[in-house]
Amino acid sequence: MKLDYDEFDLSAVRRYPLASRSSKVRREDLAAPHAPGRGIGDWLSRLPKLLAARDLVAVVEAIAGAAARPAPVIWGLGAHVIKAGLSPVLADLMARGYVSALALNGAGIIHDVEMALAGATSEDVDAALGPGAFGMAEETGAGINRAIVDGVGRGWGLGRSVAEWLAASAPPHADVSLLCAAVRHGVPVTVHVAMGTDIIHMHPDASGAAIGEGSLRDFRHFTSSVARLAGGVYLNCGSAVVLPEVFLKAVAVARNHGHDLTPLTTVDLDFLPHYRPLTNVVRRPTAGIGRGIHLTGHHEILIPLLAAALVERSGTAGA
Figure 1 (cartoon, rainbow, N blue to C red):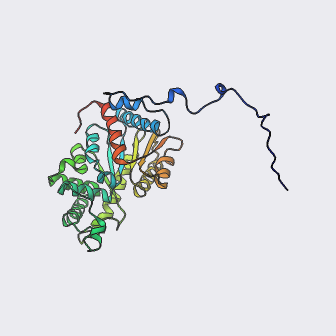
Figure 2 (figure 1 turned 30 degrees about the vertical axis):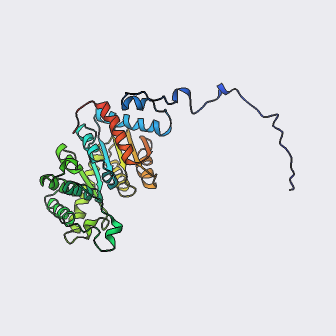
């Protein structure tokens, strides 16, 4: 078929009155300018009621509602959250009743222990790898591995084993340790590892039997917490693979046992959207029973912002 430079006649286009249309953005949804001297709560109320701003407010409301109900607020944390300096913020939320349980990956306990012992963590991998020194800090490997063996031998999971050991050793920087805060406030800690992924696995003190048994126990502890999530909130902050997979399996076991998780709010918070958190945290577990929310942004900004909103709502003394 041959075509030519014909000009389409628009004179017969059908139109309608603007006021008759259903629109996604309305005047009442618009942002309001910030007023000097107002608190974070007022600032939140002035955000546009659209997109991520609306989702941020929804997360604050969900966590505050769960704490008031009361229902669990479970935080799953990748190690970057600790490396980004957020342990004191999360410890304060523990004191205010906004943290019911903590789930960490293996690197999370490493960075927290190093911060508690030395007031510093996160080595320069590029500089240490060539000389063969990467991951070989003696106190980190020997201390954590001994704690795991001893605690698992007492019937504890991996998280409790390390947290109780660290708190009992009264490290010089306990005040900035998430694990020490968890012991202080009676918040259970579970740790979920993939064998060979953490620097402590490179040390001669590592026991595969103890690490595996302790982490499996922690899966069962975590599942018990997830089974009580009806009306609560689960937050996945900075874990792209391990914790989303563990959460989905915990949800599966809880439902297999007949636990109704309705209503459930899940939140994924990371600086990049990833397949597993979006699928295994935000979408699948909440389908038909609740709401899943993804917030894209840097942990070191979004988590303090979220915490500030909760602190202002609570009006109680923190840590």
